[in-house]
Amino acid sequence: MVATPKRLYKGTAGTTSSTAYTVPSGITTIVKNIVITNKTSNAATATITIAGTEIVYQNPIAANDTVILDLSLVMNATETITVQAGTANAINIYISGVEVS
Image 1 (cartoon, rainbow, N blue to C red):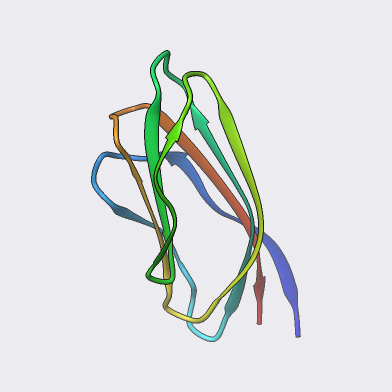
Image 2: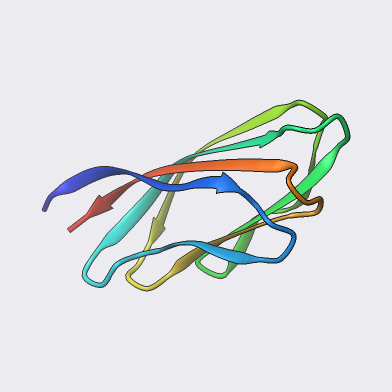
């Protein structure tokens, strides 16, 4: 078994749900850390769905604030992470994990 630390996603979430990461075939992924930053002067919401379950749902992030989630969520091959913001160009998301093959 080989465990490879990996950046799973880095970017600005759009206002429609979009796939940020898909677990490759033959791989198990463990999501370890999510950093959500609101880079605007107004509160904005973020939604992050992992393997079909909303782990962050329309969560308000205060203006110019950062929320850090330390996790240990297991994902199987072909499962996805999707991201969405309530306000355009407001929410940056960085997701780190480990791919195990």
